Length: 242
Image (cartoon, rainbow, N blue to C red):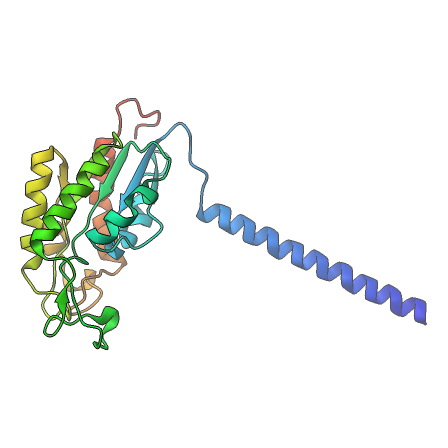
């Protein structure tokens, strides 16, 4: 009887090991699927931006599958202050062919430490994150740093601030885009006007009233234009034109 019990315990232990191995293998496959290995024959593209860019990155990757290795900075890039602090690290060692970038919505946001609204947003009692004059200086410095990569640069205009946004003033998006546009034209950088595109979105494309974010339908629309601009900027010797 004791021998039988020992055999049963051994069998149970073997089954547990097999189950754990299967789960680990499945997790590894899932991770590999989520993070495909870059194709060395394709151009390398980096997307820099806030949560708006997070929304359009995945569909952009799908649209440019087998056309380019598209990656996004693994962080919410926030305002230009955060950009200046982290850009060198975000760029890493990769030899980027195209960089699609934006800063703006976080710069023009008003925040107050006592605000209970998500992100401490408060355009009544708060302080603006980066005033327009400082935004211009910061963005100029970021552009000069990006130019050193030798990559083709694409600036994405800041998407609209809707009525009722708790921490942002309607119209500031236009002011910040005007400054950014001036800088990009001075540097000969291509402008992807996502502001104009999103301004024509219907309610179903937006996350909700007073929300700067988009539902998947909106992000997909943005991704189509992002992918189009990136594709047009790829090197002519890209091995897999589409």
